[in-house]
Image: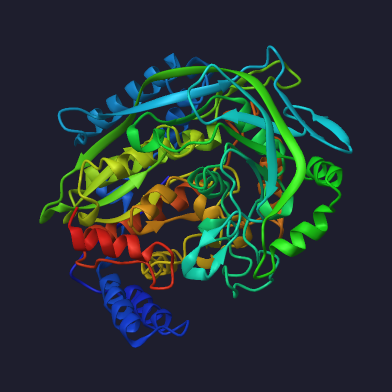
Amino acid sequence: MKLTLYKHSRSITARQDGFLQMAIILSRVGGATMKRKKRLSAAALTLASLLPFSSAVQGQGFSVSRLKQDTQIISSDTFEGRAPLTSGEDKTVAYIANAMKQIGLEPGAGAGYLQAVPIVQIQTLTDPAPQFSVTSPAGGISFKYQEEVTLNAARGTEGVNLTGSQIVFVGHGINAPERHWNDYAGIDVRGKTVLVLINDPDWRNPTTEGQFAGKAMTYYGRYDYKFEEAARQGAAAAIVIHSDAAAGYPFSVPASSLAAATGALDDAEEGSNQLQVRSWIAHSAAKRLVELAGHKLADLELAAATPGFTARALDVEARFAFKVRSKRGVSNNVIGLLPGSKRPDEYVIYTAHWDHLGRCPPDETGDDICNGAIDNAVGVAGLLELARAFRQNGPPERSILFLSTTGEEQGFLGSKYYVRNPVRPLAKTVAQIDLDPLNFMFGATRDIGLIADQTELAATVRLVAASQNRIVTPDPAPEQGNRFRSDTLSFARGGVPVVLVSAGLDVIGKPSGSGQRSLDLYNERRYHQPSDSYDPNWDWSGALSDLHFFYGVGDQLARTNDWPNWYPSDEFRAARDAVLISGN
């Protein structure tokens, strides 16, 4: 199959001139400020250097057979679901590092390809059965583990036995002075259990306007923020009330994910001020809990969305009892480097996490290996194909790091560690581009979804998509917080602008709605389940189209002088500005 990549050229074809005119139009859309218009116009001019070339002439291109081979091998039962600190990890990182070496990438982590990541894994044991119950003057309720509640320890202990902990409903559990909102105002939750709603106070707003960006979830809506803030407030335990609509996925997702080992970085920063218990509770179970205290959950949800909300101490006490197996060890990020030809001290980073869940609850066939073919073996295969293409086409002006991270499924551990301990300065990092996953089964699409549309990188995304005759569509479900559900979150919190896109849904040659139906079917039947295994019948045309897109974005960023930033209104702009000032 003949493929097209982008290559630098000094000439401008008629087709490129059309792209340039489109770029100029795009730069004027959306009410940009004059300063932003100038930046976007400058970015538009760089599109004049885009020139499609034939892989037949160049003898280069993306290989479907290599994509299939890498995906099939990494997601095979031999790799045991690629859980960190297992023999599956050993096989996976060795495979990726060897592939990077064969491609010709330089070691990206000092003398080698592996960046050691110290982690601690905590596994909730099922024998004896984990217990969560509540009592009040009106009686008591016991909840079913994994069916109604998840139970995880945030510390590497042998078990949890927390009794008589008063439950306090703290709304959405947000303390955001810059937004004039504090759900913890006037109440002391030290040593207590906080009951907290997922998402933001105004997530039901159909627009993206509001104190918390309306239906578009902010970082304050994420469950990991809820746990972090509860710990800062001194709580002993935190229970997140699940809602399919507010979370963007069914309760089965946290139930299956958290049944596997969870993890944390094993360092001083991560080890301080932690909760004893992190828990999710199904919405129907939460209703029963608050009714025991004489409240209605719907009334509490309404109150929590109102400015001036005050936390409510419920006349209910919690009891948590479960055993834990802790395991400390060193996992690994895998990093390869392609040095730049002119500005080797400036970097574009491509990422794809290699890990998955390992062994997980068996399905009806008895299969207990979560192979993670889609999530994210195909992303790793794509990362390696991009590395091959850049290596074959010659080094761009800026350096490119190819980073395959560990522990994404356990809380973005590898990317979090990299940001805390970057092998190259974050101030010299132009952008992070995440592959998680590639379009694995839809087929080629006319569109591509821009999930992270809060940075000046959006201009480059739209230009490259236009060169593919693809339409860039906004995040179809901003209320689900998809931009906080990948390794991009770690880089964003570190101030690095990110490129996060989703597979388009308008599939070429297929009926309207087929892409959405395929996505819904995957989320329902395969996501984080043993059924996420390699299928030789996948249509790889969408993956190839997306690889061209990712190559084009990275190629543009790697040979311009642009330093894109977050938009001033975004919560991560301050982090980027601080990094650039510090130079670290």
